[in-house]
Length: 212
Image 1 (cartoon, rainbow, N blue to C red):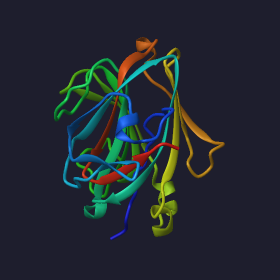
Image 2 (image 1 turned 90 degrees about the vertical axis):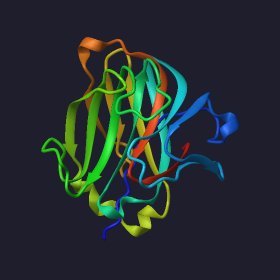
Image 3 (image 1 turned 60 degrees about the vertical axis):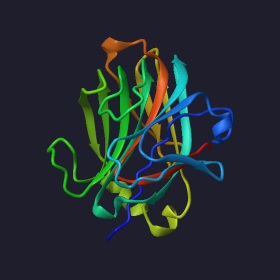
């Protein structure tokens, strides 16, 4: 079966991805750990794996790191993403994560919702509590599947996101062509965005992460 990597950059910090150099963090669900300077989520079956980072956010923010696919999507489903501008972080299994926005990359060969495109796609969710999220935008990304070769999957995939808390504009930069980006706006009624938490989460796959 075709192997698929799902990638998303979480956030930039001025230190390496070693536990002692991270901002305060809490492993909330899944099987998280550190090895060789990388942060691993090692449970391919965990549907709502999550780690919360205490990271004040205000104004323009840069979220940047690389991800390596470590397995688990052979069953045709997996995803990962991050909650940004979170006002709180629930330290347990949860669907939402306080008031925040979830930027998500998904691969599903047989999605159960018609709102989720088949194959590779991206979603933006508005989280309003730990149990409630609403879908804001869903975009098919199947044109990028041709880049997901065994050779490309063998190394880290870089990604960069710039989210402007003052305007709500988000730019997701193309990891294949770093000079290009996809731009969209979060709910204008909610600006300006501020938050104290960023939460990284995975669904049904194993990944490792490190800073660029």
